[in-house]
Length: 254
Image (cartoon, rainbow, N blue to C red; front, side, top):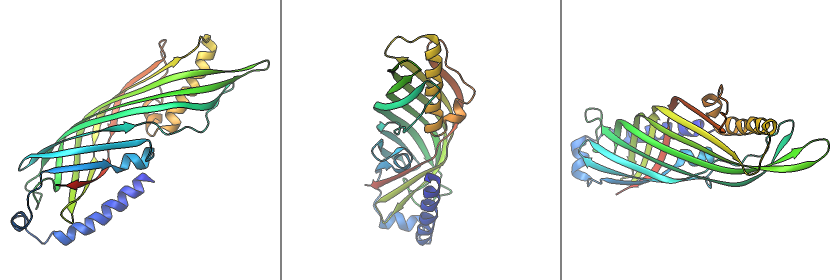
């Protein structure tokens, strides 16, 4: 669904852009004051994770005729999980869920490809992003003689560095629509699980299996990242792998 929305937005804005393409860069500079700032909201993250779970705002500043930097920061918690179960455990409650997202990038607006002054136009540049997600879950433990529960605390940390290509439209003089269309990078992933009470080795193995189901089935892309990984003796899974970034921001140019 987010991909379809992304494609629709891109198609509509391309049509809008054609209305402006007849005006030369020099004329646009003469008629329109240069506005070097953009405040924006991460629309694609909200559509993917939920409006109440992903609230990330950003700021972009043009630093010279062809370059800018931007920073984005905000809440980014994992979506609620309805059901996960194993032979002995059922997920009964999502106790708490919290998270944090921060990213920075430096943009080089391609002067020969753009008719307008930044922050309007085609850009390339490096980026870094940091994500930290925390969740506490309660699991019902059932066997033939008794039933009890176990609580788990999990933390997913992702550090990503990469290179992006995107286009930012400035429509109706103030409305900014920023799209990172290609963003390959290298991601460093760590998923850590702790238990609030003492559990035996067999129970840990079953809970680790349930936690892996939770992260790989309910969090987009993690089925690829952790497909062949297992928890170590400290209750952690780690991996480094190639990732991909695409983002749609909406904002205000001033």
